[in-house]
Image (cartoon, rainbow, N blue to C red; front, side):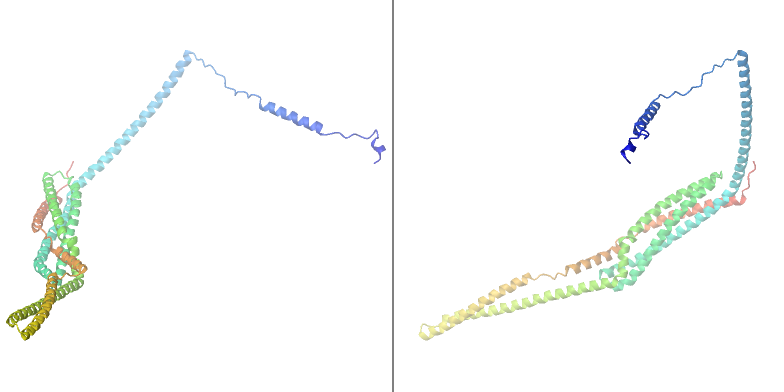
Amino acid sequence: MSDRETDSPFAEKESNRLIWIVPSVALHLLILLIWLFLPKEPPRLPSERKLTINSEQAEKLQQHVEDANLVMLHSQVTELQAIKKAMAQIRESKMAQLRSFEKEMVTVAPRDAADLFTQLLEAQTKILAAYQQLLEKIQQSEAKSPEVTKQLANDELEAARPALIEIESLRNNALSQMNLISNETVRSSALVNSGEVQLSWLLDSSIEHELSDLKQAMQSAQEKGLQVSSNIGQSYSGKAAQALHDATTRMAEYRTTLKDYAAGIAAGKLAVEQQRRDLQQTIAAAEAETRALQQQIERGKAELKSFGKDEQSRAKAREVNDANKRIQGKLRQKEGQLKKDKASLKRIREFSPDRELAREVSGIQRSLGSIFTRVPDLALIAEATKAQASVNRASRTLLETLRTQSSGSEVPEE
């Protein structure tokens, strides 16, 4: 485009748009800030209204409230009377059920109690039989003890083994009887407690007295039973039972150990005795030879005295004297050896077995010895049996009374 076209008076000049936009944005922001910071108007509260009534209106209002309360009262009274009547009906129904239940229990209680005490008598009979078996097994076991104890003391294990097996069986049977007694005693206590609940429905002083006698007898029998159980446990359980079991199951091992120990002791003692005899024989021979040498020396000394003063005699005397000196040297040598042999003889001690083997043998002997350490107290068993017999009599007496009432009782009329 030429300069002339640019300078034309009809050409429109370009304007800057920012001149209008910036003030407009600033104005809007100012209005927004003013609106945000304007205080909020408080919420409108309802205006209070004044209620004014005259006396006539007040009386009508009071009468209306009283009538409404009276209607509500009548309604509540009617509701309460209905509830009371319903409760009375329920109570009468429950009382009727209770009277019926009481009648039934008075009739049924003797029979149910009789069933319970029949089971009790069966349990007590088992206990009494168990005591008799217990006493019998203990007596049989203890009758074999003396002979077996003697055999074990003499290490006759093979001969003692059959009796030990039988004794173990008898003792286990005795412990089983004791367990039976304990179990039936617990069962008996439960039966008495249940039976006592049934008997509470019976207003009978004789039954109450018989039940009291039974409970006292059972308490005494239980105390005796605990004493017997403790005594049997100390005699036949624990170490004694383990030792007896080991003796029957490890008999071959025991026998081999004791045999080796005895053979070792015999061989050791024999070797010591042989050594002692050999030294004694050596000493005796040395003493005899010493005496012979001493006699030779004495003869040489006597012979020296018989020689004369001549040259020939002096030559023979020198020969005899030299021979005596040789003999004296040999004598000193023999006496020195003899002294050593006598000292060796004194140092020879008795044979001492192997310590480890000796400990094994000592353990076996202690184990075998503990089998018969304690003997059950038969007097305690006799007392417990006697107490149990009293329980059986009391149980039978109460049961007979209950059976009589069960068969002849009638439902009492109200």
